[in-house]
Image (cartoon, rainbow, N blue to C red; front, side):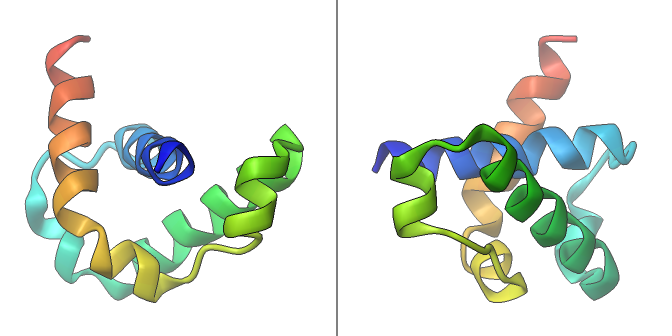
Length: 81
């Protein structure tokens, strides 16, 4: 569960860096591909065995399945800026 929360955090942070300001990203396949790629790169950089064991590469389908918690976390991060 901690690994999933960490991935949600990473995905939300990448959306903020991409200047996403609303939920429209959920229908943008190319943006989801970019976010999945960035999160996968972060997993490799962190060398966290828990993340690497469960989610070596994040795929677009994972981003789509977890779009609601990612959007919620993106809004929380945006509100704290």
